[in-house]
Every structure is written in C-alpha cells, then in structure tokens.
Length: 277
Ligand code: ADP
Image 1 (cartoon, rainbow, N blue to C red):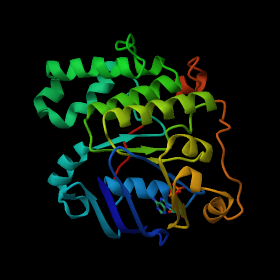
Image 2: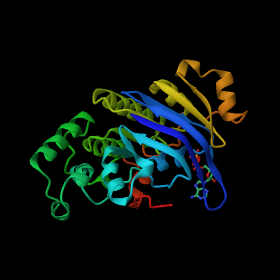
Image 3: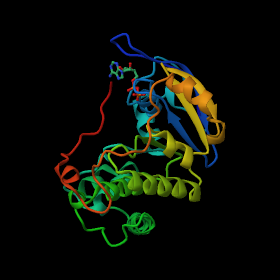
Image 4: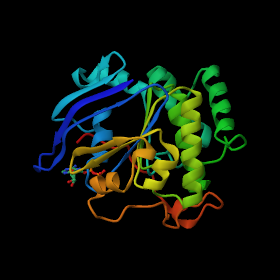
C-alpha cells in the first residue's frame, strides 16, 4: 500500500507545486490523478520515487518510509516501484527482450548486469510477460522498429517484471492515438489487477481515467480538490478540478499509432532517464 501524507514541494524557483497533498493507493486498485496542466501531477509522481525531492510530508510504501531513506536504502526501495513513462524511456538500440530484462537490473550483481547475463528464471518470466502484453513473437526486435503502442507494451512488461509493490504511470497515452490509448490503458489495468499491484496513473484524458480507474483524485494548483469514484465525478467535480478550463478528452494527436510504426515513433531519439531535481 502507498500512503502519501501532506506532500509538499516548492521548487528552488519558488513555484509551490504541491501544497500538502494526501493520497493512498491500496490493494489492487487503480487510482487516476487528473488535473489541468501545472496542477502538480508530475511532481507528485516524481516525488514518490524521489526523482524529485519533496519539501515536506511523508511517503510510505508498505512498511518503508521512503522519505526517510538514505541513498543506498532508497536505491533498493526503488526496486519496489515500477515506473511507466509517457515517452517509454526504452533503450532504442536494444531488443524488446533486453529492454524488458533491464527491469531485473536491481536484482542482479553489477557483474551480471555488465555481462547482461540474467538468471534463467528471469528470462523465462520475460517470455511469459511478453506473451501477456501481446508481444510474444517480438523478443528479438529492436525497440526502434516498434510502433508507439508496442513500445508502451514493452514499458509495461519492463515495469511488471520488476515485481513492484506499486506501479507509477506518468501520462502513458499522451503519445498514442485514441484507440491505442484505450487498449494500452485496459492492458495496464488488467495486468495490474491480475498481479494484485496497485496503480497510480497520472493521466491527462478524463474519459480514459473514468473508463479505466477505480478511483479518481483531482489536483488543482497543488491541492487535492476531488476524490471519488468515476461515477462521483460529475459536472461539479470537474469544475472543481478544471475551474472552467476545457476538460481534456482522449482525442489523440495522430502520433505513433499501434497499427503502424509511423515516422514520429521511429524518429524519437533515446531519452535519458530523468535525473535528480
Ligand atoms: P502537471 O504535471 O500537473 O502539469 P507539474 O508537476 O509539471 O504539473 O508542475 C506543477 C508546478 O510546478 C507548475 O507551476 C510548474 O511550472 C512547476 N514546476 C514543475 N517542474 C519544475 C521545475 N523543475 N522547476 C521549477 N518549477 C517546476
């Protein structure tokens, strides 16, 4: 179970991104975090694995207080947090299988990691997960040959093979067309439920959040302004979260469809892992 209590973040620029947000995610539920741009959603997700250092508050994952950990303990606690990113964060020139196995890097020795030699059971598990995400025959393809939807499936497989205690998902569909977005969200929430892993999804499109989440939390200006089931999110709730701004829907942006690897998906350069801020 993830329990975030009174989380605050003020950036060195003076921007108060989070003003004391309390949210819990437990069991095998999927919680979607919605809110207008600048509401603090990314900051919230990044504070949980401390890619961004919180300014105040506490974060508990099961019995571990993540906010109290030193560097070594934090490194090992991060094994328990599976991350799925908007831009996939895959290693472009490696194969699907190699990318999935990077999810096990926290569990093997530095020497094994250097040799890319993984235990047989990890490889077996990788085959099984690839089958489950619908990439059963693609293990030897380089990820730069894949469509956007296929890449996000690799991202899901890599996070799941980590056997995390929670999945944190940051804008998983913002590079995908509407149909692929819906499929990917369904796959993600189904797999998480099967494996009884709770999921926190930071998502822009309200209709996708309502269709796939068990619970929705809404941020506005760094504060929690809505918490409830998709059915509870009526016009008044949406107004609290968006305050008259247009409510973003899953209309897509025409990029990176699952049906064909288009130019945008192929042109995307390797992206470095997010660093400390
Ligand atoms: P969202 O994900 O909801 O769009 P963010 O968490 O990205 O919101 O941003 C919340 C607020 O924090 C915004 O005002 C944004 O300008 C500010 N912010 C985000 N990242 C940084 C940063 N690295 N340095 C300074 N301010 C930042």
